[in-house]
Length: 381
Image 1: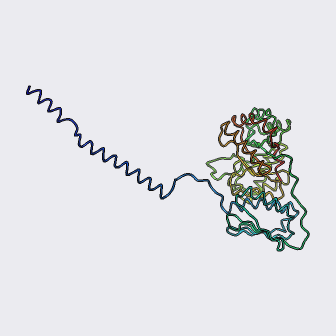
Image 2 (image 1 turned 30 degrees about the vertical axis):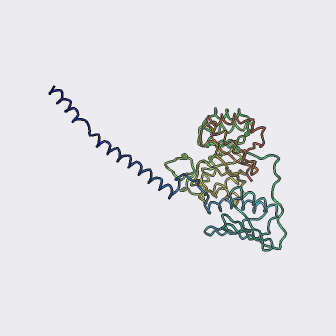
Image 3 (image 1 turned 180 degrees about the vertical axis):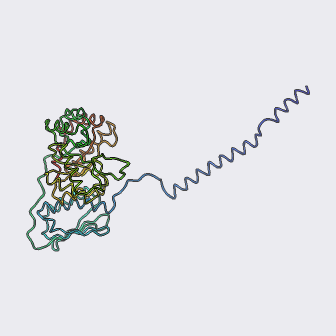
């Protein structure tokens, strides 16, 4: 009897202290509550820490506007000698030794600028020949024309019966089989062919035989070069004008009868004025158009093309950044809606199996829907 009581007492004395456990639990709960209250207070002070969309800077807005304005001025019959541009911080001024364009062209210019730049407005003073553009309440661009001269003839082209969409398939030239799959879709998709690929010339000839349009897909230096390599034949910032010309001429030889060109990568090179001037001079000599793929918001490709006199278009959307069939189909439909709003739109994609499948599933919409699918040259002005 005595032994059993001693054993039971011993077991009880070795049990963890219930009072100590309760205290520790209370401390933990209090710590959790304190942490939650601290986070809540931080949330109320700073607001929800969500990723916000990147907005355009003033410089980006001005760069985008300059492409459209330069295009209108040169198509109006003015020469580069008649247009002086002065860039100031947050402001671009034009001094134009020529008459004010007609109202319908200024209206059309405003419409195109507003599609590029949200929240843009203009103010016109015909008596002084001045047109001013405002963004977010601030003056960003001023055009000053000479007054007292006969207005320029209208340059606005007649609008097509349907909004127009151009789809460019980049990175072709690696596989004749992929090219055949694209041709089998029976769509007016423009072939952009990498000249350094083994099948580049074969793909170009195959596309031309089937009535497709062929472009040279020019490899150019990206910002993260050499970590990202655009290819051994790429155009780089360190090259002389003669070397750039030589390389570009060799590329064109590998893609016979190309009608135009666009950039492959090139986020750094398309910001480089001297290099882009050489590229566009060669394209002008060959009577080719240029599509700026806009791999950087600071690309000067469109503006330089206008100044040199090369027909130019600008990429509006990449269609397959997410390589999933449903996602790409959604982007194709967004491209169509964009064309319906602004009259035309340019999309770029790549020969992924998912992209080919998405184009196949949207073929009827692209062929018989509310837009006209055209080759890229149609949207280069």
